[in-house]
Length: 122
Image (cartoon, rainbow, N blue to C red; front, side, top):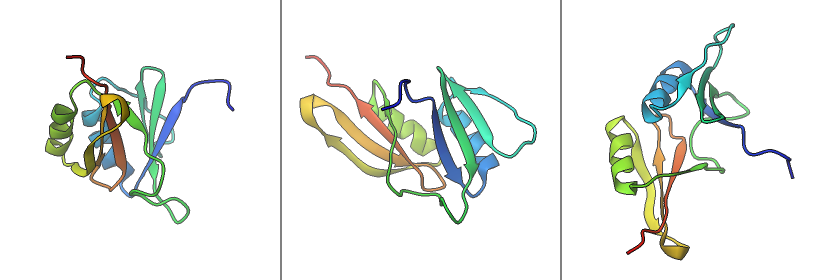
């Protein structure tokens, strides 16, 4: 097992520039990092890099396996916000163990963003 936390999430999209702009709106607290040459998008978010790269023959865009889940305090509000940006609800919401809720929203390129809301205390 690696000796450090997750440091990067790579997102594949046919139009990585448009996808980078979309993810900058989806994660407004992220800081854009520019590179030379300008051949991928990079957003920095609390020590985590979101790297938006061109899809290709080896790794396409869309739901294909691994989904990263982000903790949110209000699942419904976050789904509505991402849908307003052009995403769409793909799976859920589903109640899971311990009273938590999860769902997946697809970005405009078909990649899934997982959302997970902790159980609320009554």
